[in-house]
Length: 330
Image (cartoon, rainbow, N blue to C red):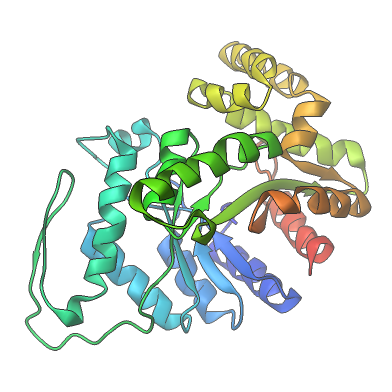
């Protein structure tokens, strides 16, 4: 849940926990902290995992990020999943003041192992000199061990190289909401396997988290328009063009980008074909959504229900998310 206030996130996380979901996820943007949201979620859930999908792995020092995660894991009784991403190059520069936005995969591949070393500070000093980070951390007082030996770290990826990072160093991959079944089978799984092979890891130990665009409404057309709008929003940047091309939707994406350049939002929605919508998202009546969830379940190790928000009111996003919890409850 990204739209709305912290209280809205708490309501959703609590509802998911009560309904028996395995996990509740939150994100962050330029007006929202995933860390603060996770703290609120930790206090208002008791069973489900709580995770960031994603928190920014830039803009925070490794020490701050490690200590935030350590505290959240303690607050939640060992239920945290730390999902990290870098955002686009423009976000890194404009939002976070990053001076070296190149090679985001290498940045995460340096950051993830460093976080794990910081969590072992009770075993001794942490000294590190890398391309992106430098650290000389020596305890000046007793350091208690964290509540768990290993806090799971997931990393986000869209292109092959960023997905490969999850295979190389991460416990899981946070998939983009526009991944089709074809993209998962032909790009995601092979990239994870290639990354895991590079570092001698078992690819089956890398959990694939699918963020599935879903809208439920008794009026099927309303639900489909909501999902189509979000797909069009994601297809507008040219950076995602290779992903849509690999899924077989290059023509639709090109039409969406042209309509976006013309400032024609309706044409953007109209350019989302039925095949594109059904390959990426799930929309319709409760029965149709249940069938759609069953169809996409095999693509991922863990499926998160993700409400569209583009062109929707915050109240509608909240209502849709709560309805999805009811419809998709295990």
